[in-house]
Image 1: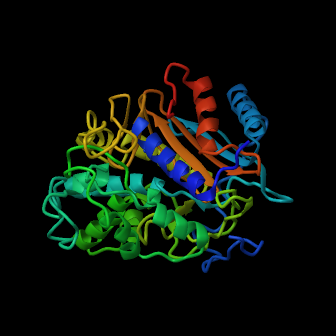
Image 2: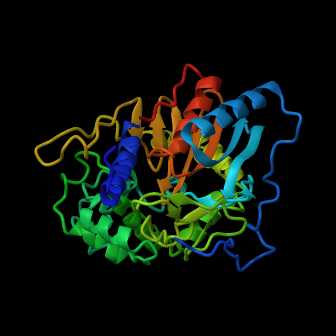
Image 3: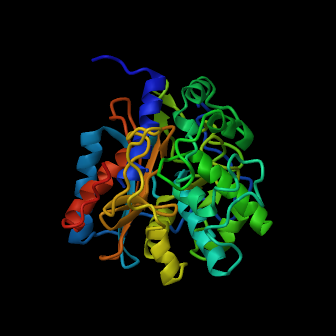
Length: 413
């Protein structure tokens, strides 16, 4: 079998992430990170524990599916929580965090793009309050952004600006691969998309770009005068009681830690404390545990914090029908957005499911909610050397969904 180069592997993973969004979007010390607030919220999440035994038939079935998936996919760990109408069906953790250390449900992991769902909800709340309009252009807050007089808040939140994605830029990939502990600033990250022409005129198509949420966060901080981590805590995670979901301004992770491992650089290594500053804006780099992830799945997916009108906008803010190949953008970048599979406002919609699916640096997760059944799935997975490429938490969730909602496939790919 021909080995995959690290750069090609990372680029393929980034493009896969983008495709999932549209078909719908280091070695560190062995001891876990120490939080500066050992007794406060986020420390241990001791209310996030395995479901009390004996399990009922549905819970046993879900665990059987998960155990088989873990074995089939050669996963190091799988954490899961399933709820129906907000009531727990099963919570568990299988495998190891690291050698000799069992995975536990209250272990914290990086949640990446889940933050985009929270930020999108906060933006819609500000719209409901009349503080901004989704179609406000950003030049009043971000005057130095190219085409700022044509880029709107809606476009940033829905990936319709036409900006390139720095994650798929070969120059960025080479730097990140060589220096996984590097601390990145927004200006350094934005220099990559700014060095390219736009794929299309703002609002005319769809293409995934991490640059959009860097800019959206900057705009929201200017609009509200509040740092993004505080804004999201006040408007989303706080009201939902997600006390174990928090931003980290450093590569630290609150204890207890679910450790991650990856072969992104061509050899299997620990990646737990690789610097995640490249993933999104400062203040939006979050960690969570599986119980909070399930809460997020249900609350975001049901529009609990939004009016009915805003919830409909969350699910379809005008992206359906956009995308597709053009003279300036290939179909592999400007992915077609359909009613069945499209990017909403910070979320992905797939056959009625509302989800987010972060995957980077050895961490993979998914939060998914099916409104028609009140079904919330939260899965996190980590890798062994033989684990296939891609987000394997999605695969586990797809198998669980097929058993619980066979007529509503969680067909992300």
